[in-house]
Image 1: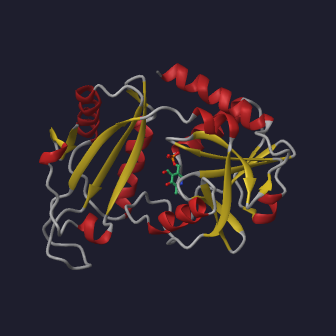
Image 2: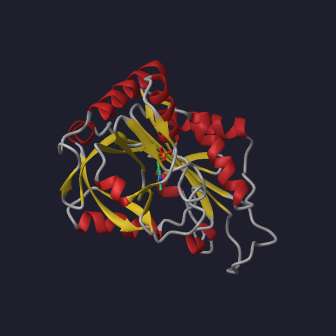
Length: 279
Ligand code: PLP
């Protein structure tokens, strides 16, 4: 596999990361996961906007201009002949003698690689089971940082319970999933947590909200409670790799009829059309 290491395309085996890289020691860096459909990156501009914002928020300079980063990622897709899958892109503050404070001298390190993977059509069709978990993450979930232990522990709790996602809440207010945004449908209205510091501003979330508007589905970007979640007619999650996936069971209790709902289906169809237009 050919990967991107800073601005060089090299064999994966040839990449060397310093043991004192701050991403490795402190999770001091940011990342993006970008979907590739038919060899084309989906919403690349939005992902690069978010990458730039995340880097700015942690006061980390990016190694290359927007144009150069874009060009390098397109070369990565081309070189690997990536058709359907995703790119993982991460940038750390680089290597320096271990100290929590920013080093006076360090060069950011970019690594990126492509993964061939199909759309999870089974999950989209049949839905998934979710559990609820206290959201123990920090208070800047809007930054797509490498610190993912809160998400790792939540997702593992879901897997241990035989579920596929953990829906997080802070004192009974639903925020998002361990690696997804969460939506509910109640009396025909779509609800999702506002895009503030408590959630990642998902690209798929934003696309879904636009599609809902086009479809004439009323939307409320307002926080909702665990009780709202449990009494919702429909629940679904969104992410770059999952797109729109219905949640048919929460903590062992069926959501609505226990089948993916009509609003979810409508949005899934609209999403497929949106991808069709882009590819
Ligand atoms: N929320 C969290 C915590 C995530 O980690 C992710 C994606 O990994 C998302 C939401 C979904 O974001 P996106 O649609 O940009 O993939």
